[in-house]
Picture (spheres, rainbow, N blue to C red):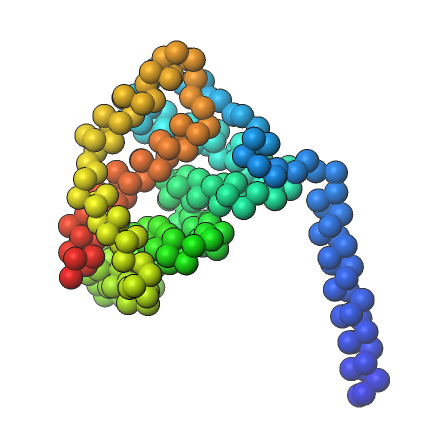
Length: 236
């Protein structure tokens, strides 16, 4: 028995470095992204203005598919040394996954983005409302007999209860302020004033603007409908 255990241990010690070597080899030859300036610039031809795309489900879906392909390509084709770039990539993929109703992928990317937050307050509060939304969906999928607003309220309360208030207070106040200020009309006005002129001038939409559209679409379609529930918990 002792000799068998020693043989297994020797095998494990052999396999572990080999696994690391295989991972290193998979990165060999790939270009590195060490700063934001190293990121390839993607642009997307669109029919009409950015605000028209935002309001057209089919056009928005097509844009998100193209954006997802390019953003996932960065993870597959590059070694991304820049922490902020990795956080942005996972944040964008989370927004796209939410719009595509792939909630499992959305949760994974939200968690990966949070891990890359350097400040404790930002890490604790990052995507707080969306994390609560996903947790509420999971609770209902698991058969908990709750109304949607009740499930959402419980999920947000659970997350707030585990946070150090003295550290996250400013972040929570900022989230409350956004809830009070944002509306679909305001989002559309921002797009019309900041993105439409750029699309009109260049005839295309940059990846940065496409990412902003994704985030705003998620906020308008997934956060604002439950604004009162979120605000009630945050102010209690």
